[in-house]
Image 1 (cartoon, one colour):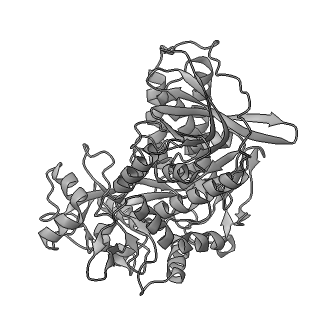
Image 2: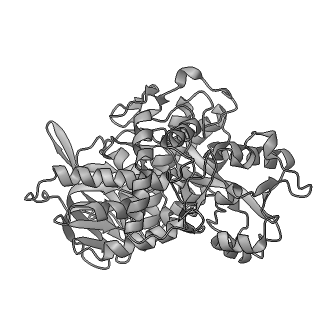
Image 3: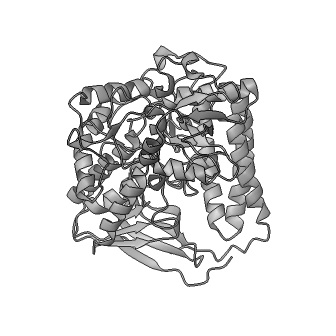
Length: 547
């Protein structure tokens, strides 16, 4: 569809893509003398942060220590966490909680201690998750957005989907100098010139048929950075949240990890048997990958559509107070969690790999930063520990903005760029191609590249992905773009990266489990799966090194 209005060129110092915790924090920490433009793909509140129910992990109790937080994170990460990154992020936990409080986030208190109420989630050996009931993410999103709206140096543009990064290619060094973005309300493709760009675009779980994520999680930042020449790493490690509400009407309804932390049991429908003790001595407090595989195993073994998550043995008043979001959400589907079990299934939840960055969030492309779920920092390794993600968002956002504040000159202007050209394309009369390919991609990723994999399934997925990639790129060249086409183009690229990484890792580690290589290979400890777009081939597994 042709644009309803003429495209516009915007100039800024710092361009941030994404309005979740990472993007908002980066905007707030930017030097107030710098112009900041923050782009949101949908409404300003639509982000994975907004749906995060658990909380922020931090050492806030005398019975806890940073050393224990480091040990838990490293153990959950399956031998791939970068030690320096884990230490740096966990060291900053308490400071990030104080920073959030300064922004207006009122965490749930615990009057007997005079401090905050802390929950315990999968992988944690102590209670260290600060939260706001079971809607922590929404509260953080609202508080930070209110602060951003009050900053005169920050311009907020909603309903803008990035199409591609603009790269200045010169002898000796390329540099990111902005983006093209489509205003989905007018269809115009605007040009954003910027002196630096921060990708805070979130993950890519929409590449799977079932996901806990919002519709915005389509891997846009990952795909754009890859096309621009950035390395990516560990894309085989896709975290499936074990407990999403099972109901055809219940889109993206995650049942918080904290339910299991407070005593919820996983049971088989009918018999009511607790099955987690058969898989791990930690039971319901085992890491997410173990729980997701256990549920998947029981569902396939017994032909079940779901299993039960049961916390009805706890006092009803306590449950309604502690889990108001989960309680009200279940009631929408005629489930009273105080009286009956909740039907749950695993769903794609978190991308543990991503664009390779250093400790400041710098990517391989000068002028381009990546923070939050889109980035591979080395914190999560082969499996993310619950509630470490929001902490990582905040720590890396502070680091990226701090680096920009120190290194970006005050008097330079954004370079000249060529506006978007759609003079040689036409409107499509075959939108069914997009919808069909969208559905096919997500289905074969779910069937072949899901919780349990095999080499044959991965080969089938790669074959289908190659054909789709060619068809979608041809469509992209010939027709005017739409949000669905942009997202589909990005998702098929991300799917290819996930499959290639999965085929390279011939062992089972963390979130990557293959029936053909079911054992852990100790020689692969500390080895990341790295892909380089300019190499034209997949690189061998590389030792994890913090730059």
